[in-house]
Image 1 (cartoon, rainbow, N blue to C red):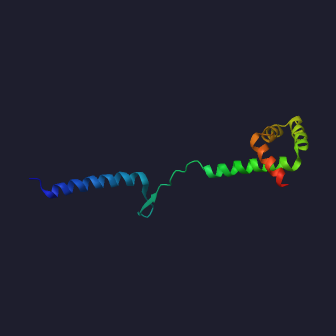
Image 2 (tube, rainbow, N blue to C red):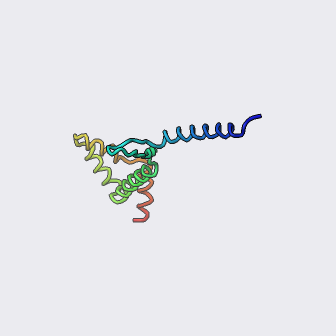
Image 3 (cartoon, rainbow, N blue to C red):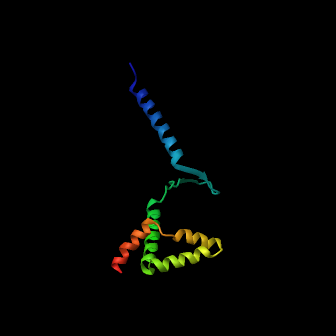
Length: 115
């Protein structure tokens, strides 16, 4: 017949092994100059900040649409042509970024009704 203490000892060994491996993954320990053991947890890895990216995109298209609504189609196209004609790389990137797209045209159409 099996001794209950053997089963208990086996369970304790398994639990201690699990605890040891989980502590190894979540904490780091080191000895400082005074001989104290310092245990610190690892920082969690952060994912992609989807909320921040969405706020950035909504803000960009919102401001671009507001600019298009405020200036009007003709003035906006003239300023965009002026940007296309300049020779610097920054102006070329700005012209490519500010060209009308369906989202900003839709925002501009809705804002024109309010203005």
